[in-house]
Length: 200
Image (spheres, rainbow, N blue to C red):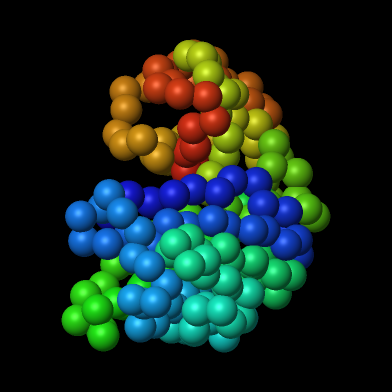
């Protein structure tokens, strides 16, 4: 099941998603007249909390969802969907699972959606200190081969604990380190890729 990503969603903003409700072949939509249910579950990956009471909530022409006759779901996520639970995080990862059933409930389709909500109160270039260090999830990486992490520990002995790009494990090399920056070199497969970073 492929995950669709929506990046840099401002906290407290409205975001519209368009999702094709595909049948078991993956090549055609399920017609609206053949749908039984369409639901969303929205959680914070950091806390595991359900967001805005969206737990298996119907979005079949309800709760911000609208389905066309041809089986295209247009879903509007509102202010209370795109919240920041933890103000220490510059980017908060939310996860939506869309499930649709059809053929009188005998068949089902699912779609995973990653929603990176941007904390407008935090500078993503200088993350807040968390437990003696800091972590960043969903940090944007431009196309190219060098990437600079700016940290606010004021400590040249700061250590890069983990670096996990979203495209999977990759080889990287620390080029330089100062009291405020760590410069990495690695291959970026495409512009706008993302990584999780932990520094202490």
